[in-house]
Length: 571
Ligand code: DON
Image 1: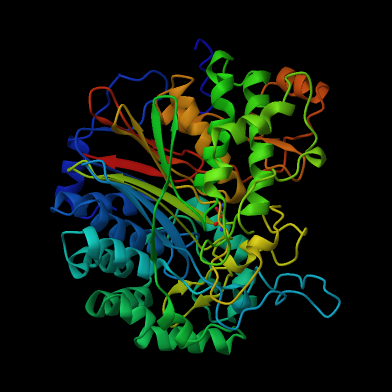
Image 2: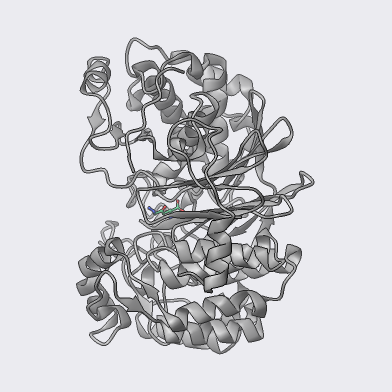
């Protein structure tokens, strides 16, 4: 494509390690446009430099991607409490060097005392903030179960070896970025309101300060010594359950003891000569991107210039139809039957696009979920890792909103999620991401709430090609699709594809949102004249993609999103 515009210009562990990391990392000019870090063997891209470096250090010490997952995830819990967590959950998709694929679901679950109308008052109206702030907003956390399950099945080192550098980091402290300080300041009053005046994040924290979290170091030390059961059945579980109940929550010791991460078959589908491997329900990510790619494939999106009206219309119209299905059909597969094969079948997707025309926008009110014949019926973080053996993992993990429920367990050193808001509290009423849910995603005891997290791995010609994912609530799905298309159809390199401005549509509300100040006014007028309703301002959440591309030479190019403090490191 000739239309290749890049709009954005853009603690060490030991001195020896830092030197070796950077001396082995050099620039390569294989892909045009802004280039990311290039590495020969292995790479970690995450929301914080310290977390990427700890993950890479584990690989350099002989660990693999699953060992690095445990290290990176916990280092994010220390340095990026905005989304990195012990009190949340996530999903991991893997592809081993031999081509075997799989995924693990460590999504939070509704506590056993949860019930369908728990966020409604006596008039059936939603009680403001009950599903977003404080102890009632939290699901039973899955993160520790997920990282231990993955590491014990595939890892090579011991949890104690892996967690030691993270414990050291929590004790030694990390430097707070100005972005972090700004967010902490904005929420300081809320932290105090939810947790009391003595709470850890109630203090004034400035950019450049070194923040130590010794109580989190102590929690991690117990987990390193006693394993995953420390969190779910040990002293940590007792403290956590007692804390939640003292704050008016319903999570009990037996809810924690009952939690299990679940291995699930990923959603695997072709797009031209790519094979895309992504997360299955209870994440909507895999099914929804399979629908979007399936709808656009016969219409050759790559024939249109990048960010031309046709490129945008085609994607928006596919998204409109896919999100209508998402919101109706998808939920926890352990509770509802999901017609995955039917929803992703080529003929069905073709029929969904029959009403599409380049002349004018389809109205979302004219699109309902498709008719399927089947038996029955804001914060997250992503990291991508390729290890020295060629294994790849793609992990998205979250507390849901920024710092989750804002409930900080001061005795343990971490925030609790507000993932209960991802359920449909009341049919037809949007959640914090404007998503409208249906019966399939209603609340029930022990059920997992529907997610949009889309950790994804892509193969080309049978070989590993890309590892990709992002935070961003409902915009996760559309950001992942755009990043893959930017490289595959619009010939960008990895960093360039991550930096390119993004747009989003999710059926309802019937709006197309554009990253502010990044799209041409002529383009916007063209789309408006065809009946698209555009939201250009006030749209801060549009993903923060962290990805890795295998270049034709076999080297790895990292794409670290400049919308955050994200960092790719490799060797
Ligand atoms: O699982 C989900 O879809 C949401 N809880 C993700 C939240 C998120 O990405 C917030 N980040 N901006």
